[in-house]
Image 1 (cartoon, rainbow, N blue to C red):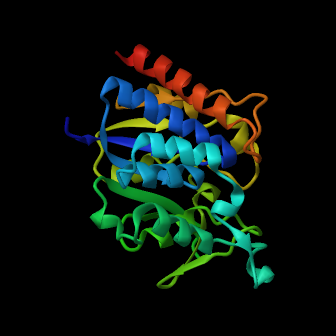
Image 2 (tube, rainbow, N blue to C red):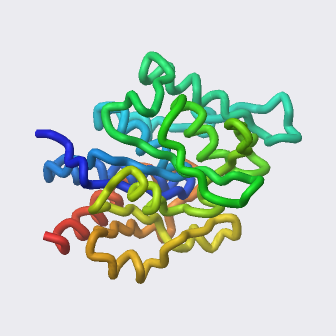
Image 3 (cartoon, rainbow, N blue to C red):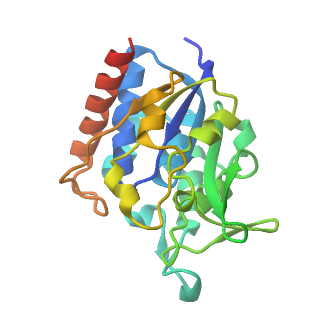
Length: 243
């Protein structure tokens, strides 16, 4: 079965909540839904990149269950730029894919959303080294250092666009599965969204999946099994409603 090159998948950020995206991928696989265009912000970018790179779904689930923050960050030697160093992302990419591929060479089209600190605007990264895109998209201010890309100084995409619908459209999607993690996440001051829930629900080109995160841990990995199952449940409900 081939990918649908008109169908996009947009995965939002949300710290440990990003494990719910794995459950969405599992439900899609069961139904033979294969988006050819994948966009992600922050933790959503990590899952989206693995999917776009063709990492087998059992391996993505295994990585989510075994994930520790040390997988993407380690203590920084330059703490004024961030308490942690995101260079561990590059190591993880090499370990998983055997190299640091160019985004344009991935099996599926991929884009990560970051924020340019100089312009305060969203930047869609859909070319160049994968590690640059991921390290930029996850660079939470004060925790992880900014990433320089040409004249751009890039940090976490959730600062301006935590739900990357625009990035999926930029890739050419005419239909989009949007996974928006619990809206309470966006009450954190630094997180912003371009489209409201109502706008997403009313758009006929969008299937909106909204996992319910009430009572689940956002910054520890204790609830990963529940998050994966909740992602499946929410995706099942959304796909059934759209059928």
